[in-house]
Image 1 (cartoon, rainbow, N blue to C red):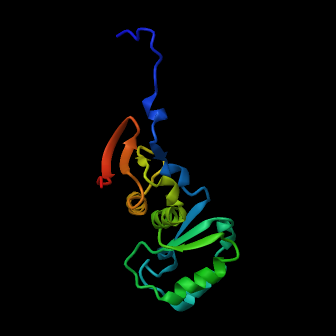
Image 2: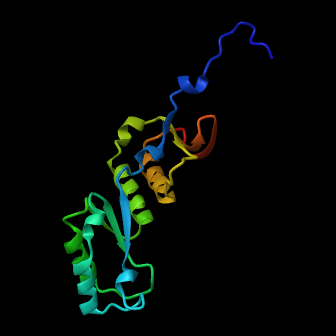
Length: 173
């Protein structure tokens, strides 16, 4: 089809449409996990004396500058003081401690970022939450950003500006 001398117009670029790329909020820090099952007898039973000895003998410097996610992948019953003991030992080395696995930390991190979001700048605007990211953005983040934006936006969509899935549209008054 011929253009007949008319300039091409990018209507998406000219619209009020705002695209939020949540992948940009992915944590940039080093995230490491510590599975407590390796500290347990047969990966199931915490023996206090042996546990304390292993905590003392562990080289915690390998976690320097990282976020350390502490969890146990087995069905062991671990007393609260055991987590406290590890926290006291590793705290001088890490930037941040998290109880749970890496995916749990990433979900919590996104929630913090979304809670800090100044939603007033999106007042009355059509918003596209970008999909198809290379880094794993947890579904909980998409749910939370929807809850935060819905009260103020004109509409909320998911995907790419050229191909979106409608999620919410404010009713006309």
